[in-house]
Length: 194
Ligand code: G4P
Ligand code: NA
Ligand code: NA
Image 1 (cartoon, rainbow, N blue to C red):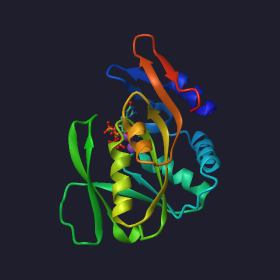
Image 2 (cartoon, protein in one colour):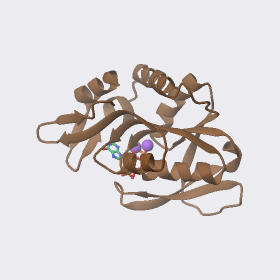
Image 3 (cartoon, rainbow, N blue to C red):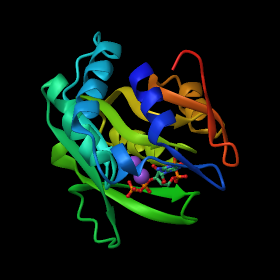
Image 4 (cartoon, helix red, strand yellow):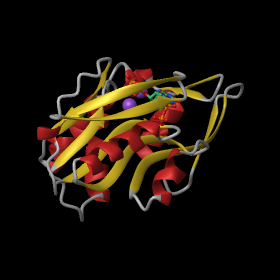
């Protein structure tokens, strides 16, 4: 998505350790006009699929998923990062390992918000190693619902998430795939077709 890649080039800041900061328009301040264009682009890429719900994960997935959902005319559910383990059978839960934060956390969704047989589109702002997306896919499978696709705003293509998900036969649409970043030169190489 050219508009997004231009914005990343303009406002993205490359930090040491291959971290891309996009606080100016995605992760802290949010540019809703850009979010609307992102929503239209996901709708274009997933035009052929019926989507009953969008599933994302707190915190930074929520804003983008909420705007995207308007183009699919469906509700958004966000998985909660929970500290407690008081599972009462009405909750779906899975463990997610964060390489960035070097810890494992549990995420939960009430089972009434992902029903058997529903078509679920996963939306998230970033994908690195894919642990968050894989966790959401696990929750959807546990709910006996269908993963119709995974829409990612920015994929770090030099990490393993995209490959892992695509190997599972999942349909991943990333609007910008970063293949390389140079913190000294502040330059980014995007994958051609992203
Ligand atoms: P993974 O899910 O793809 O395996 O990612 P990982 O655990 O490595 O990343 C942890 C968090 O950091 C995730 O947000 C992820 O979206 C975000 N992240 C990873 N790499 C980058 C990056 O280069 N730039 C930015 N801006 N974010 C990155 P999270 O834990 O869900 O946190 P939250 O911000 O949504 O609360
Ligand atoms: Na994040
Ligand atoms: Na996120």
